[in-house]
Image 1 (cartoon, one colour):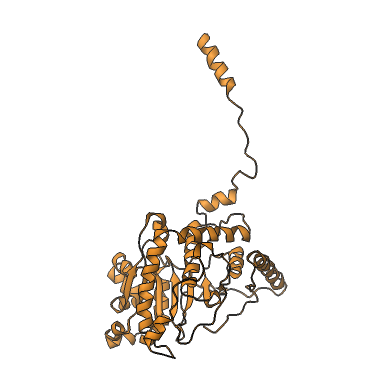
Image 2: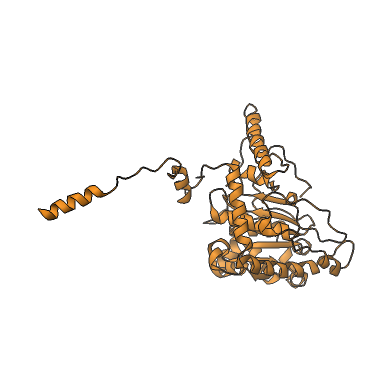
Length: 362
């Protein structure tokens, strides 16, 4: 009896369970996003997303991964610039004007656009295209990849207005945030089929499907075009190791044919960013290696279609009906209002996705 009474008294001594306030209780959409539910997005505003991008940037700058990756990228770009003929000087002049040192302290730099500066005479003018960075509003890994892109643009002194980004998963909020950052959001799914148009271009494509790399190579399938291409993305050597030779040559022939015509430098692997940048390399295409490929390599230029390709890892372009005239104005107004609100938060001028024009032809 004494033991039973003591147990009852101990039970009564336990404090009553408190209910968590609504502010601390996780929301269903946030839980769904954390679980990886397709299309799920946390209920946050643009200011919160911008702050999280800045935090991801600060974490990246002080990491061992960033310093090692920057060294890898610098080594590749310097070799790449050496083969580019600057219009106003020899390759050595272009090498001297490849800006890889930021003027500001990166950890203190805000997420807003970097003021564009006139490139010096003889400078190697890069532009950039980013595919597949993912839903950065709800995914920490995608935010780290976006932060890496912003740092890369700053270190190479590529104006953000000369960086085009696209992911079919971008939400309206994410499009507005990208516009507030000064990046140019493409209005349609190009499936990676973008020409460099004679300008040196860095393609940033973290963890994209093999077909996207194959499409990019097809669109620039010449010695002149590929010599101006740099790709940061999945290791091509890794693709060769993972895919059956028959599958690689049948469905991704341009990747298969270019393996002996490229140079690849792998990104460092650190525990902090193992899941974010694993199997990532920077690739460039030396003219000497391209010229050594068999002549018939360049004859075959059939556009990929992937009709009988299983497990295609890209989202294909869809043919959609044009928006109704009575709905278009309200949609544009919503985009504009969101972009301008974010504009006031970062203190810079932005373009609405509906009214934005590409700064120069691609």
